[in-house]
Image (cartoon, rainbow over all chains, first blue to last red; front, side, top):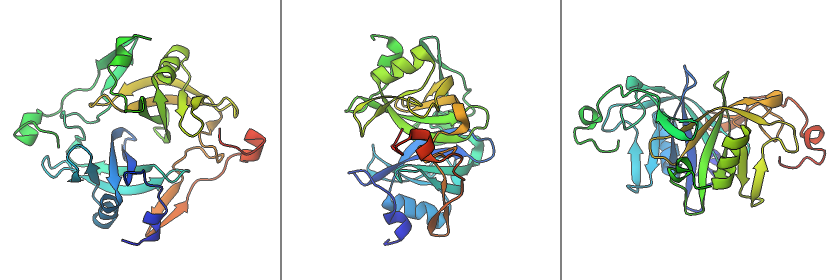
Amino acid sequence: MSEQWLDDIKWTADGLVPVIAQEADSGDVLMFAWMNREALHLTAQTGHAVYWSRSRARLWHKGEESGHQQVVTDMRLDCDNDVILLRVKQIGNIACHTGRHSCFFQRLEGTTWHTVEPVLKDPDSIYGNGKHP
Amino acid sequence: MSEQWLDDIKWTADGLVPVIAQEADSGDVLMFAWMNREALHLTAQTGHAVYWSRSRARLWHKGEESGHQQVVTDMRLDCDNDVILLRVKQIGNIACHTGRHSCFFQRLEGTTWHTVEPVLKDPDSIYGNGKHP
C-alpha cells in the first residue's frame, strides 16, 4: 500500500484519520468514525466503508453485522489533508447502532440534549445481541 | 460552567470534542474542528461558532479575522456523546482559509486527490497576511 494518495494524508500519531460519513442524496451527516491506512485502502478498493474501531482495535466493515453497509459515492479530503469526508449511500437507511438514521439524533434545546430522531428498527433485532455494529 | 449539558459530553483526554460544521441550508459539510468546554459554552451563549485552535492553543472565534463567522442554527450530539454536529449559516459563503466554500475541496479521482472547488476569494485579501483564520 505505497499509493501516493494514502501518503498524502496527515495521519495522527496513532496512524488514524477522522472520517465524516454523509448521505449523498439527503446531505444528512450520518456518523463520525476513524480509519487507518488499511481501512481507507479497503474503502477505496471495495467501494464500501471500512473503518478502524478504536474500542475493539480492529477493522470494522460497516454493516458486517447489521447489513447496513455504506456504498461510497464520493471521497473528499480537507484543506489540511487530515480529515476525510465520505459521501455514501446508506443501505437500510440506518447508520446508527441505536437503530436510527443518523448518529446525531440529540439536539440541544435550551440547555438540554433532546432525542429528536426516531428508532427505525430495534437494535436487538438488528444485532441479535444488541451490541455495537 | 457547571451546566449539565456540558458535563454530558465525553471529552477527550485533552478536554476536547470534535466538531463537524455543516451549512444548514445546503447540507454542505464545511469544515471539521475542535472545541474545548469554554469554546462550546461560548458557542451556545453567543450563537456564533467558537473553536479551540490546537495549533495556536487558544480560542478561535471563527471569522475573527476573515469576517466569515458561522451563525449556529442547530447543535447536535451523537450517540456516544463524543462528537458535535453544528449546523450553521456561513457568513460570506466561505468557510475555508483557502478562500473556498468548504474545506473538503479535494476529491479522490482514481488514485489522485483533485481540487474540485474554486477559490471564491483570494486568501491574501481575506487575511491580509495570508495566514490561517
